[in-house]
Image (cartoon, rainbow, N blue to C red; front, side, top):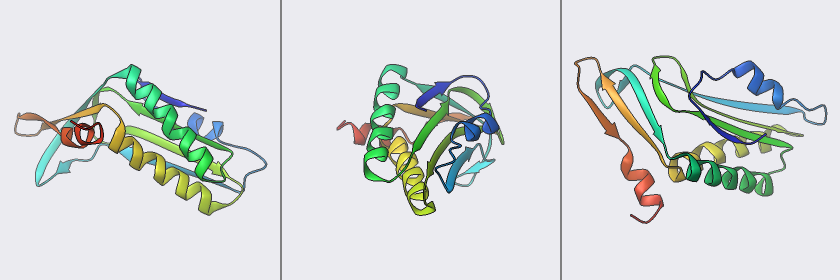
Length: 145
């Protein structure tokens, strides 16, 4: 299990199945979906742009940090890039562990750090025809810009 970026739809069942382990009593999978609104505006779709080399290396660092910090057997993350429609999964994070608390903590750590540190930019396409890049300041701040 590792960090991945894909332009193809994410197969949630295959992702969760890869986390299965008879030594684990808990598996947490976080799904981040495309929703129909943000900050009072009706959203039609999202577009993600990813700087893959840095996203992959930093994503692997985040997963390794989660493995060291929490008692998990498996931890993984996959993020979409490209144009996504409402309801599509944009990101999946999963962690399996002997006990549920570690699985919850690891999954939360990975999504929080990924949102803070990875060079992934989001463009919102609104129902009124306008589009704009959002949340770019979070990635810039994480990298000292």
